[in-house]
Length: 113
Image (cartoon, rainbow, N blue to C red; front, top):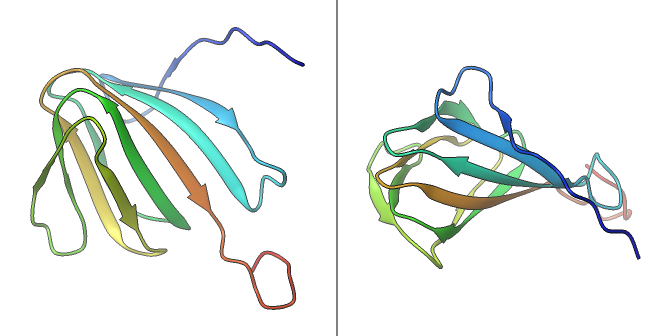
């Protein structure tokens, strides 16, 4: 067993957002898991998903938008998925804690695509 105590670090270019990688997964090219804390009014700037991305809200309230630029409210238990290349952003209306899981596609031969 391994027990680690880690700190959140400010995310460059996103004031009020702090993150910490929880796990790079079994292969850093395949899976990455991050914890993000967004302060009220903070946002993750619009950007394309580099791989499949799952955004799970642990606590707080906020909004998300994808390619269609339609804002949708999110709160505890909300799960959002973005496909690779999809432009997306998120905003915190209250202090919001989220877990972000990013996964590269798997090709039929069993490796990362």
